[in-house]
Length: 115
Length: 116
Image (cartoon, rainbow over the protein chains, first blue to last red):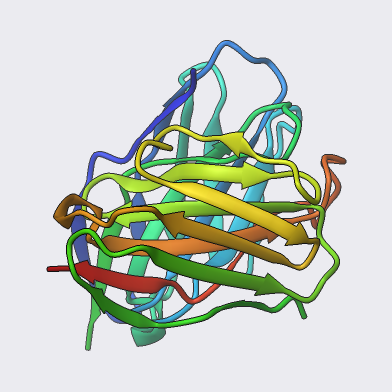
């Protein structure tokens, strides 16, 4: 079974600065997908970014980028130029090459962006 | 845009009551999921369904059942609610396995259930 670990329960960052959220996972599969989801306070969970394990290039989406280290089984999220609207719970998730698109989630990191 | 809706945002029930949580998606997705979200534990899968009338147990199915009579609707049932089922419940849907660029899960707003 896969496990996903987020070692930082809470983090804070000043507006306009950069912050990195950590995620490690454990799997015996060679082909899989990794995701970061964002859950703003009292709002719906949305996908931030995804990474295919077979791609060496790190995924980027505007101010969000990942540092994917396959050998180390590490998948961190970097948020550049942090904005107040980035305040949210962030969940790292793993999807193996399985039927049904099932996800295994980490425990989450609560990020607060301070003005 | 995919829309996943859940019947209630907040729900308060008594111990022993039968509780129904409903989820509806409008994107004709085959797969639907029920999670519970607890602080520090992230999201844990309760049940999922990959087709009408089909269901599979997730990681924590005890005390729960599900129903999927129509493709767009997936219900979570607490047969006899207990205080340890107080939690946030999230529903999600996704296309079938294809690993395409849009193959991810889309989430509803959640139902915060309190069992007294």
